[in-house]
Length: 180
Image (cartoon, rainbow, N blue to C red; front, side, top):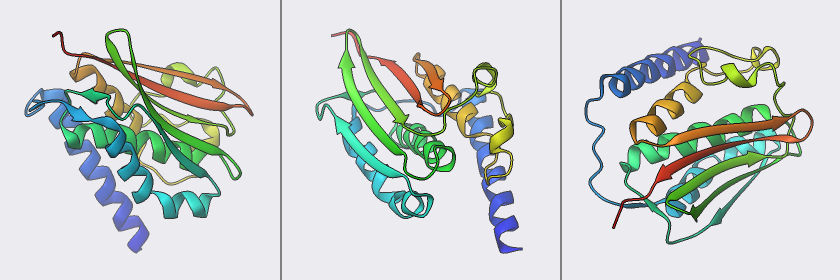
């Protein structure tokens, strides 16, 4: 019963957060946020669940990369993507949270070496409550990737997913850098 209550609370929190994102309220950045420390914090917070799932978490990237995204929003993107990798990659997989600077953008990627996603499911992964067949038996609200998409879009970024069955999945968020 406790697990069910926790899952309902998580669902309500995510629905409310998604509603906040869609309304456009309070999505203001107060300056450039370093990305690598946020990725490291997320990995530390998820160490235990990753160990239980048999997934190794790694963090790498450019320590100077910054984005103009509120820390909470940046954390939500990294955490939701990392949690997905932990839930669905499978035992023995490695999930890498990384950041790099590219021409005019900061690129945040969470890539795993796990089970992958069927090509038919890829176009629908960012829909609310959509869950690929093989993931329906696992815990989750079905809102994490929809939230990631809204956060990235609100910050004028873009999001891509690439996957191959039995080879892994990579979610990549591109955030435009400020014009200097």
